[in-house]
Structure formats: C-alpha cells, structure tokens
Amino acid sequence: MTPRELVRFGPASRAVHQTTAVLGLICLATAAALYLEPIAEIVGRRALVVQIHVWSGLALPVPVLLGWASRAVRSDYRLLDRWTRVDREWLRRRDRRTAGLPVGKFNAGQKLNASLSTGGGLILLGTGIVLQYGRRWPLDLRIGATFVHDWTAFAVLLLVVGHIWFASHDEDALRGIRTGRVPVGWALREHPAWADGLLTGLPPVTAGEDRAMDPDQERVRHRADELLPEELAAGSDDPEAQAAAILADSDEREYDPEAAPDTVLERRTSADATDPPD
Image (cartoon, rainbow, N blue to C red; front, top):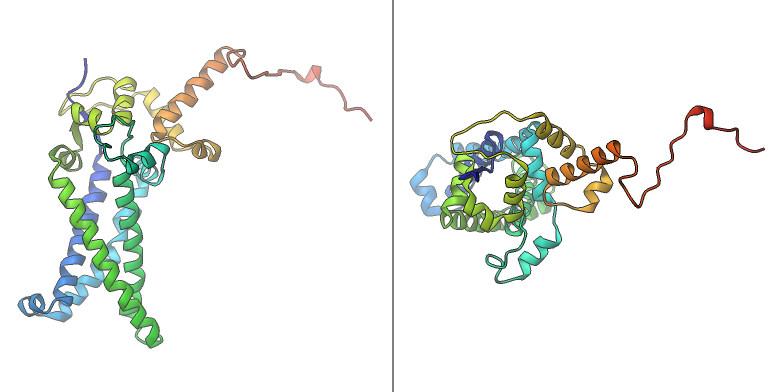
C-alpha cells in the first residue's frame, strides 16, 4: 500500500523555522518603524522599538543554534548546505518543474534562499552590534556599518517577500512546514528522489499515524550522522539513503567475504605472521 502522506518535517525542524520566522519578522517590522518616518510617527516610542529590534536581532541565531541538538534538524542543515549536480542543473533549466530531475528533500532554490538568508543574517548581526555597542569606535567604521546594515536589510526583505510569495502559491509546501506532512503526489512531483527514498525504504505511513522507529531505521539514522569525510565528499542529496547503501554493502561483505569482486581481502591469524626480513 502507498501512503497518502509523507512526513517531511519533524516537530524540531518546524519549531526552528517558525521561531526564526517570528523573530525575523519582528526585526523587519521594527526596522520599518525606525527607518520610515510615516510609520515611526504612527508607532512612536522610538526607544522601546529600538530595544525590541536589538533584542530580537540578538535572539535570531538562538533557535538555529538550538536546532543542532536535534538529529533531524542537523540532517536538514546538512542537506541545505550540500550542493549536487542536480542542483546546478535545476538552476540552469527553465523547465525545472517539469523536467523530472531527481530533486532531493530541498531543491536548489530553497538551498540558495537558505544560504543567502544565513549570510545576510550574520551580516546584519555583526553590523547591528557595531551600531548598538560600538559608539566609541571610529566614526568611519560606524558609518560603513550603517550603510552595510541598511542595504543588507533591504536585500533580506526582498528574500523574505519572495519566500512568502512562493510559499503562498504552493499550499502543499506551506502545509509541510505547518503540519510536517505533505501529499505523496506533491512529493513525487517536486522532490522525487527524496520521496522515492522514503517510499522504498520505509513502511507506509498514513495521515495522523505515529510510528516508533525500528532498529534498522535507527541504525541508518545513526550511520547518516557519522558519515566519513570521504563519504561526504562523494556527495549525496540524501545522507540516509547513502548510509543505507553503505550499511547494505558492509552487511554483504560481512556475510560473504568475497562479495566484492574488485576487492581482495587478506585474512591471516597471528600464527601466519612471520618476522620481517633483516
């Protein structure tokens, strides 16, 4: 049986996204109240608005950092940070939505948005600290920080508006970050490699059903979190699928030492060892 829905985001991933979104929107709203005079006249209480802006900006990285405590969130971070050949092709093609590319859990547009948002957030954090706490620093530095802070905020505003626009035009994607589940048809159309991996590697999951992870799934998840540097360098849009393949190959070799045709395994006991020649 094919499930009607797939689990796309767990509670921790949704909490990180929603908390970051709230803090980011507060930063943008208070920035508008500080920068645009008509809004500033309506809101008033400039000192309070400054404090809210500063504290929400300082708190913005906190949910992202706390997300590292969750294995599922760490997996999402790795996927967002890993670019593949499919991602580059996805960006080049105009028919990216209909070309049937084997897109993983995140497409290249989502990865690009995450990278730009993270970079912009770090720039805003650094320049904001200079503006708020560097009043005794050189004037040229503070003027430069103001210029960079203002224009970076405008760029981030465009990213946020674009992100919200795309989300509002894709109800299933919006549902995925809101409830954690997406329809199978949407997943197979938009993220076929990720959906195929779940459908072929996991038992069916229907809407509203929670299932404890079986030992094999737990083993795959654990191995995915401990991929070796050379395995990461090989590149994979789905670390769990890569981990499953590695474990399957390892199990086959353990069961049949001669299972790998291109590998010669030498097994000797201590009694077979000889002293090296002089």
